[in-house]
Structure formats: structure tokens, C-alpha cells
Image: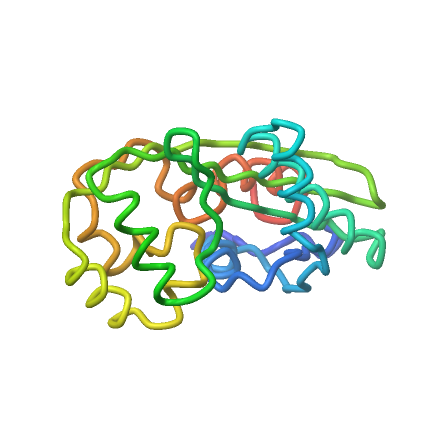
Amino acid sequence: MTTTLKLGPDTRAPRVILASASRIRRTMLANAGVDVVCEPAQVDEGIVKDAMRARGEGVDAIASALAELKAAAVSARHPDALVIGADSMIACGDVHFDKPADAGRAVDQLLDLAGRTHRLLSAAVVMRAGASVWEKLDAAHLTMRHFDRDFAQRYVATIGDAATASVGAYQLEGLGAQLFTRVEGDFFTVLGLPLLPLLDFLRAQGVIAR
């Protein structure tokens, strides 16, 4: 007799909503067997970051706060669902990096990081009925190799809009691997989500098979 392992969710499990338009976060969850829908949160990240930086708060606190705000905004509309909010930030020395506004800024940002080690923080919060039921903050340390402006410009031109879609202006899962000499930390954290601890939580909720 053959036994089939069912990786799908329990039909009694709560819905899972990702409070984000991030393609890579949705892909990570879907590839791991999580039936998830995306509903971006309407949060003015710039105002939040400016206010928290003015108070002297670091990237850890800012990433966690933004993840919570995103989850809360969507949870208010879907109280019965498990809503995942996530955010990633980069710090290199005393400088915080946001998603570059355009290709030119992406090139400048890559040159600022070239030859240096930066810290990438990925935070995730899960809310249900407006209350936080799980949270995680994880960090990775990435060392970029030295390269010149010509290389950075060619790299940004090659990846196109993807350069402005991520906080580091790179995608480690693709051509971005060419930028680095060393990566210390969880691969999924670099992609934008502490996925393995999140899967443990979702498994306990019956969303995916134990």
C-alpha cells in the first residue's frame, strides 16, 4: 500500500495573506507549499523611517516596526486570516540604505557598498485579528567585491527594474551573486524573509503539513 504525503493545508486552517506586493516573498512561500495571496499594505514607509531615524532608532527597530505596521493594516481588513508583514533594510557603517529611487541611484548605492561588508535585516510579523501572534528578525552579513562604475552600470542595465525593487539593488538568487565574495547568514533572509522559522509557525497553525 502506497502512502501519499499531503503537503497542502488543513481545510480548517486560517487563510494566509502576505501584506506585500513582493514577488520574491510570494514565490518563496508558494514554493514552500504555502497557499498565500498578496494584498499590499498602504503604509508610508518614508514617514515611518524618517521619524524613527530622527529618534535615533536603528535598522533592527525600523524593519520590525514596518513589518508590524504592514501586517496590522491588512489584518484590520481580514481579522480571521493570518497576515504576514515583512520588511528588509540594509546598514553599512552608520548609513541606512533604502530601495534606490532610480537606476542612477542604484549604481551609486552599489558603489557605496563595493568592497565593504554590510548587514541585511529581514523582519517578519504575523498578525491575526489585529494582534501579533509571531515575529522574527534575522540578520545576514554580505561582503561585496571591488568593482568599478562601468561594471555597476552594466549590471543595473542588465537586471532592469529589478535594481529598484530590492533594498540592496541586487538579487542574490540571480546575477547579483557576481557582486559578492562572502555571504554569512540564511539565504532566505537575504531574499527578504526569515522563511524557515516562519514555516515552523505556519506548520503549528495547520497551514502546512507537520
